[in-house]
Amino acid sequence: ARIENNFGTLSVYFDNAFVPDGVANLRIENAFGLLNLYIPKEWDVQSYDIDRAFGSVNEYGMRTGESGVLLTIHGESNFATVRIDYI
Image 1 (spheres, rainbow, N blue to C red):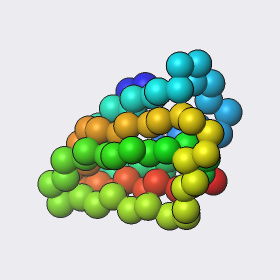
Image 2 (image 1 turned 30 degrees about the horizontal axis):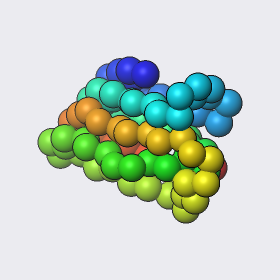
Image 3 (image 1 turned 180 degrees about the vertical axis):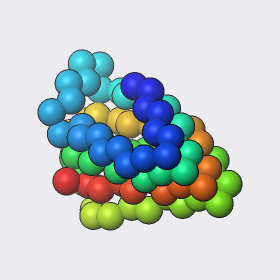
Image 4 (image 1 turned 90 degrees about the vertical axis):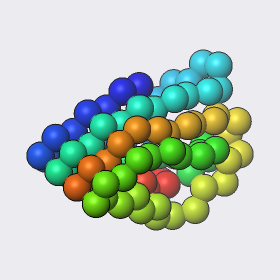
């Protein structure tokens, strides 16, 4: 998936996402905004590679990684915040 958020607030829920081969890639571009990602706690978020210029990435909750789904997150967050909530 590819997500772009500029000068706003965007919330994306992955709780009903279907990942047929067990691997998902997420590319984000976030500028001057707040991007909320709601990811099932059963997913394994292997790593995230998010370049930041005056931005932040915050994780909340615990992930268990027991479903076999692997998610990689990469992209940019400039003058913005990425919030990752495990639900």
